[in-house]
Image 1 (cartoon, rainbow, N blue to C red):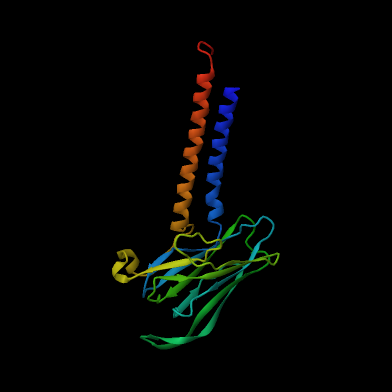
Image 2: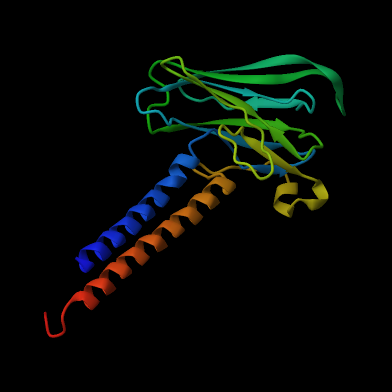
Length: 237
């Protein structure tokens, strides 16, 4: 009986480890912007990564809102096969002064819409590239995102970051550093993002949780083996 209870305890620990290993996938299943840092006043290319976390519907549309209080003067979109991209302009309350003159309107929203055969299927993801600049003199840009599914559901990734809390539907956030504080590579010019590059914050958390889960699983196995050896009479094979 003692052996049975200890083995059950080991199995329970292993199950907890497996659950911990599954957490990163669930926590990272939201719209993200990669890379998540850039330099104020510079130009950069960002990628909005959109995973489909539904089992029974495809993602058919993505809407990204750009800030109007800290507008971005130049926005260029990279074509995505099977998707139609539309950049919507809006009048600025405060015009932007540039070397080429004054800008009175800027892109305030980008909408990507999928053709029927290009929608993001369950357990797949798609990436949408955008060139932005010059980036405003602010600490961060919050890109509020709407993800529409084929069944009509709209998931609003619009929760802004708050200290000490984890948002349920976090919006993609691009953190901006001043030129003097930026690494030499970031200040040199636009950032090229390799295909498959992961969001640093999200994947760092995922790796940490994964390692913790593995350690818990090994601990459970060791406990079960030691208990078995202690419970087995000496001289018994």
